[in-house]
Length: 199
Image (cartoon, rainbow, N blue to C red; front, side, top):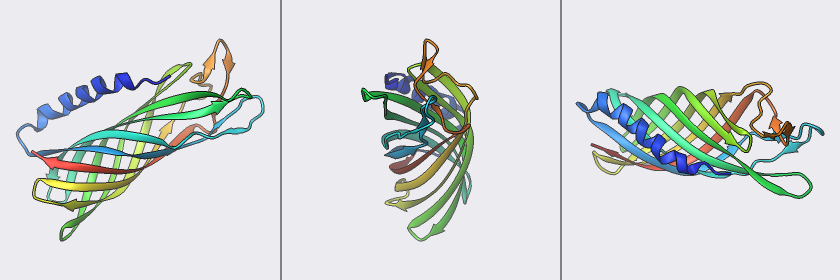
């Protein structure tokens, strides 16, 4: 069951929180879209793997200039991964919302800028059995092609690592668990493209 209807209020809340302290300085907004691959799940009884599909993800970042070669950033990202359970091929999903504070290093080469980013935050996982919030780390490498002083095309390869709870019931209903994590760390990787505009 998708929880995408909860995404818009969450994004608006984050944007409201980060816009207040940076109103006096220039900041930029970057909407992203791309594809995201995820860790597999496991069937508890048989210990066999369940593949999770590669999902379309979207997000938005708000960044501000900390130095000539560095930015601070708040990034919120959403994806809904589908997977198939059981002999009857029942489709289920896990929805993931990431929210991170990132530091970005900028390495300029004429119109191109290479970016390296690391950040800490949290991830909210939602499934048929409820939801869970886990601490999360992210790292990325990307490029920026500046169209003008205000606008840029952004590409990015990013990884997320979230520390999940042992004995989680995210995929359980009435004490029956259809799936469980392969490991205590959930890994997502994404390839994204975005359009950045400075105000």
